[in-house]
Image 1 (tube, rainbow, N blue to C red):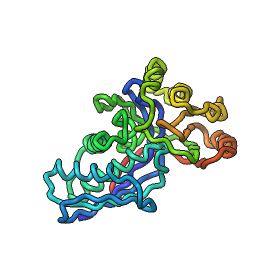
Image 2: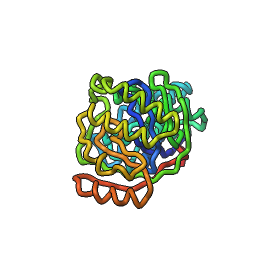
Image 3: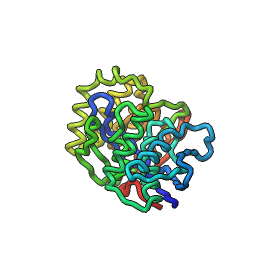
Image 4: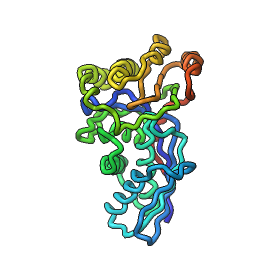
Length: 281
């Protein structure tokens, strides 16, 4: 009884920490989960090339799937990823989604993708790896495209398929979402409301840029990477609670920005949006 699934990472349009409304878009970098069911009654997690990694999230995801299906099994969950951990690129949401879908596949059952997504969000809250529940990040990873969500109600407000070129810069440091100063983020709630209005009107690029300046200020990140990308890109933002930055726009423009971002410590890479979401493989 084996299942395997792949879930994309995501970039930020609107950070949900200020108001509970968030928006994210799936990108073409992924986490893969393999789930093997057994009769042990225990769930164990492993992360490729990271023997000391925290596996509570993927273990809880598998447990919740088994509980909802009254399935008396144990499981081994193995994940591997192209997505750097604690980088603001939704690695936790991708791992959760991949694990939920792989566990369902191992059981040979199906579940509506929105419900599967909510199981991963519930697991993230249970183990304390998120402040908001991250339904925006999880929905973008599960469904693909760009989503806008109410994270307090785990409600999808809108989803749209988009085809963007994307540039990512990831500094070497890490930033854990659960450690973010939510009280400082709430101070930029009026700006977050503006970003939400722009996103709901389909003005995702402008929304990203306003979000970037607001949350760099709230979370203490420099705005220089944003200015390096403006005014030519369609949109640029701090992704999640950092430290990664993401920009969208024309390929040639992004290649020029990549040269500027490339002078900074860390890694830069070009990719695209992803519209398929999480799927079995």
